[in-house]
Each structure stands twice: as C-alpha cells, then as structure tokens.
Image (cartoon, rainbow, N blue to C red; front, top):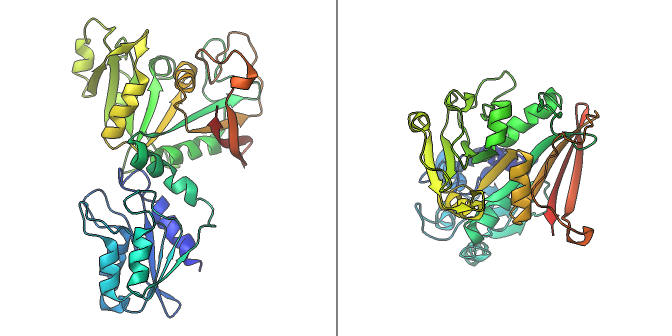
Length: 361
C-alpha cells in the first residue's frame, strides 16, 4: 500500500466538510502495518493526526505518520498537533505539503525536528496542490477560491437559442459535476440559470440520492425574481439569495421561502460581486463553485475574480448566433488582454472532454 496515497484519499473525502479548516488525511504505520487512520473533523473537532493518535493509543509509540499537510504548531480551537505527536513518541513523519498558513509554514516541521523526530517532505504526489489551493488562497486573503464550471458544445454553446441546455454532456460528466459540488463549500448561479433550468443545485450520488453534506446554494438575483416554486427550495442544505439595492422591496414569497436573504449595495445594474466574495470568505466559504450562466461567469472574469476553470466539452455542434456562450460580460478588446489558461489538464469523461486550468490575465 502507498500510505500517502491512502492519506490523500482520506483528505479528499472530507473536502467541503471541514472549512474554513483544510481537509487533512493521516495514516499511522508500524512494522509496515497500518495501525490507525484519521481525517480532519468539522471545525472545533479533532485534526486528522489526533484522530489517528486516539485510535492507536499507546501503540503509536515509535510509529511513522503519513499526513497530507504539515501538522499545526499553534493554538486555535484545538491544541497544536505537533505537541501531541511529540508526546506520543512518533519516530518519523512524512508530509505531502507544507501548511500555507504563514503562522505555521515550516514552523511545524522545525518543531518536530527539534524534538528528534525525522521529517520528510513528499511533495511529488498528484492532487496535493489541488487539495489545498482553496485553503491557501483563503488563509492569505480571506477570499474564496473561485472555480467556474460549465458544459458546452464543441462550438462553444451552453444552450440552444431557445434556452434548452439539458443535457449537453453525458451521464459521466454530470456524475463528475456532482463530485465537484460535493467538494465545494458553496455553489453559485445567476438568476437566469434558475429561470431557464430550474436546477436543484444539490450534490447527489450515482443513484440520484443527495449526499449527507450539501454545499450552500447561492443565487445572484439582484431584482428578486427567483420563483417561489423553484426546485432549489426543496432540496437539503442552505439556500442564500443575494439581491441588490436596485430592488424596491423583497417579494413576500421569497421571505417565506426558507432561504436566507442578503441585500447588498448595487454595483451598476447588479450585485457587487467583489463585496459578495468578501462576505462569503468571512463566513468560511473556502471553495466556491460557480456554475452559471454566461453573464455571471463573464462578470467574474471582467473583475479578475476567477481562479480556476472546469470545462466539459461535448462532441456536438449547436450553432446559432443567438445561442449563449459560457463566458459573456464585457470581455477584452484585444487578444493581449485575454486570459491565458495555464497548467491545463485534460481527461476523457465518457464521450466528453474535461479541461481544467488556471486563468492568468
């Protein structure tokens, strides 16, 4: 068994469930046998290392720890993990990533080394950067890591000219979307997506059943047009409807919907998205998934607020000058000002192609 791969798997299973803390996986090994495992619990609960130590008990003495993130060395809602590891008599620690928190970065490693524990960094593991990219941005800026996700045809359309968009991609791509939602703290769409598609915006398994933990659903609806019978009101989890001061009054139907209503100062004709991201970051939203539509995605690109792009491309042609595209907004007036997508990866998902990259202006 690759013990670090197992730790990474444990961490990924907790993504979207530990924010604003990072999802961490830990595996304790002794005489080439796994004696305990752990993953970070929700805020206020034990960190992954502590879960593993409690499981192992006195057997942790002279064992080796494989952990996805540098153990913390500061007091927060819980005591520092480094202290517990030293007291437990751990002999070696393998770490896949330093903690990007400036208060910890490298200090946890030094504290372990100063106590006589051998520490090794294994930074080559695939998926580690992706695992902590959201936490890294949030701990340094207090802002969410923004991923725009869309499904489009080969000619760059997200719907027909009549607005029909179900379904451009196949089942496999939709299952992957639900997995991405499940790893996110919140899913955000614009009002047009609600009006045209009436989405549930829940994360569901392959059988269509909702996962136990759901991302917050956020609707950017500057004028309060969300229909009271929308499917998003019926699913599990929290719904947040964001309006702007352009609206004269909040419709009574929305007040009775059970959703949280947030009215922000307007910026132009709509919601001040920069202010919204600040507020979401302050509420502990680390990974924000933006699913539509073209107007919202375009506005975020215009403001330079997009950190990652996840695009599913279907082998189909829709055509039509009036068919919507995934990114609208103002756009750029010259190619030199366009966003280059860096560190691109591609993957075949059923008959579709998944492209993931990071935009740089």
